[in-house]
Length: 118
Image 1 (cartoon, rainbow, N blue to C red):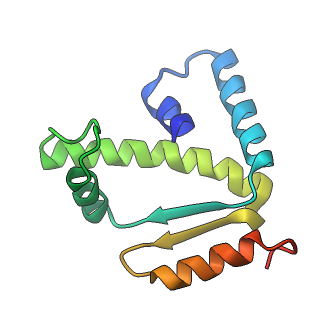
Image 2: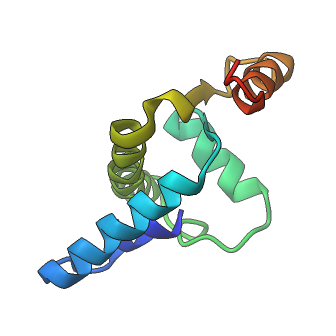
Image 3: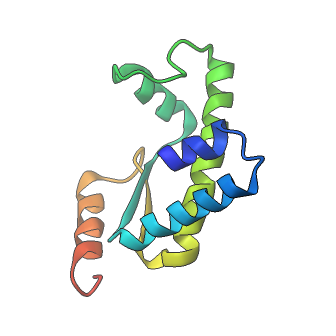
C-alpha cells in the first residue's frame, strides 16, 4: 500500500526515486509467499472505506472527487502489483469480494501457502 501511495501521490520526477521504488518493490516481492488482492467494485470499496472508521483521504470528499482519488490510487496499486505479477505471478491471486465467498478465499490462500504451492 505504501509503495502504491508513493507511486501515485509523490512526484516521480527523479530517476533515483524511480529506481529506489522499483528496487524496494522487487525486494518486497522476493520476500513474499503470496499476494492476495481483496478487491471490489469502486462503489463498494468507497462505501467500505467510509464505514470503517479509519482515517482515509477520501472520507470528506464528494462522490466524484472520491471516485477520482480511488482511480488514482488504483493506478498506483496496479503499477505496484504489475511488478509482483512480472517477477512472481505464481504467488498472485485477486478476489472480487463482492462475489467470492470467504471459504473460497481461504481455500485458495491455504493452497498458496502449502510447501508445494498447492
